[in-house]
Length: 332
Image (cartoon, rainbow, N blue to C red; front, side, top):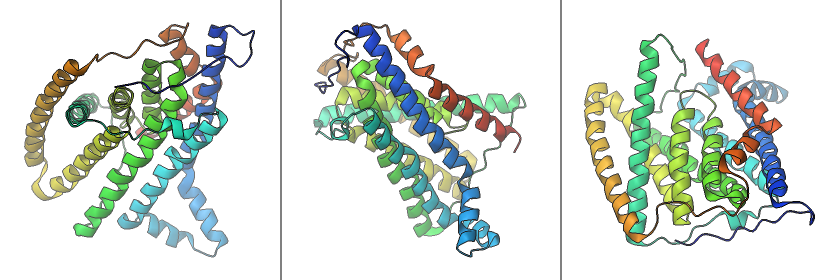
């Protein structure tokens, strides 16, 4: 498990290393905060824009709204969202930060035993994160906090299932891993692996844009970021991400067929198997090498680097925007 070469040196020869680190982190925070801010606005107001743009081409508002309630059409919209939020913005960020995308993306082959171990850990962590978030959600529900995040209706039949798998499992696994575990971690790794994993997980959580998904996305982001850095490959991350989303799709369809109680019983068995596999994965990896991150070649403490990034003006704007938009779901 070798670490890729990410070289960073202060741009100005008389600048101290710590000052150069702060300048780089602040610039990264402002860049990522800006592109995510505009992406979040597009995600929220796209339907309004669709109505006005369609009107320019003579399409009535009723026709547009009818299309937006069509389950099949919404799968196409989901694919478009993944592209708008996780591909184009992060490509722009890489250009601004002068981080070669080809160096951020790694699809190197991972050995069989090592691959299985990371898969076991990733799937187990996703399952546990889902359990924790669902439990926390039920606690808040019992306390009277109702979060009105309506899910769109799934298209029916085999074709509908395939469409949902493509829009909810295949495309997100590719697009989201490209943007966060690929480009974003590539931008942040010059400041250390641990820093890159934590910040990428925070951003990954925030871009999901609502309190129902942010905690889960953050926890999964930590696991996938760890796997990306330690394995040196995005391949494992993509597979874990796909499996997690595919299982969610299956649970959704099976619930309609079998009922909530039966699906919960099946998921309990699945969770137990995942935990066992996760333990096996950790044990196997501990025999191969260290489970810790390599020490960062920076002068600044990790907590200070995180503070610099999160207190960048545009990261503050982006975070506040997400919080405000997320709170609106309580009143919808």
